[in-house]
Image (cartoon, rainbow, N blue to C red; front, side):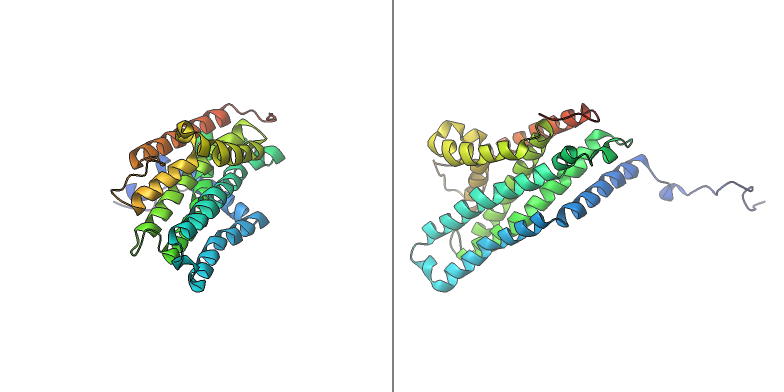
Amino acid sequence: MTGAPPSGLAPALPPASRPTAASGRRSVILTIAALTARSLLSRRRSLLLALLATLPVAVAALVRLSGRAGIDDEAVATAIMDRLIVTTLLPIVGLVFGTAVLGAELEDGTAIFLLIKPIARWRIVVAKLLVAVGLSIVFVAPASFVAAAILQVGGPGWSGAIGAAVGTAVGATVYATVFFALSLVTGRALAFGLIYVLVWEGVLAGLLAGIRALSIRQYTLGITDAITHPGVTNPNLLDLPAALVLSGVSIVIAAVIAVRRLSSYQIGQADD
């Protein structure tokens, strides 16, 4: 005989509707990520970065409309794709988002409201990295794709646009992850990040071929060139397997450092 459950007892949920630990972990990570993204996108600097991301597309369109690209396609494409996007836009976006998602909160003390909650620190790292990497890719990869398509990088077809989008997406992932880890190691992440971009990548990597393996810019250029010109080897750039492996290693090392650093972080601790 069936009847209503005893008073004060809720009916048992069917197995398909019972909450699981895995779904709870996912919801925590997604909640933190959503709140972080909303906070970042509401700031003025995100609007400035969005405007900066439209600059390569606008310049490429002006060049194409003026007919300047037909005079020296390769030189114009290099000036826009390499110097404007890979050398300038990509590291700036990765640096801003990578250091802001958690490093800025640690500096101003607002991160305490998250760190005192019973949430595993690695989940916080995953949530913050999802935002830093995701926003970096969204702000850079589409602009690279459109600019390369307008300039017809690599000749007729979509190989140049696809190569630019994939290369900058990988580069954005590495930059954001590395700078995120740096923001947990030191309170001067912005300064050290700029030194790395301007001095290491801007000067030394161009002069000393031996340090290309430690240049995120070189990873980006190697991946982009390999997809844009399949089967063609550029001795001045890393080949595709090396660029992909070094990118993956950099991401893993930076993520591990971030998790270990945040796991050992004490409330009230001040970074040097």
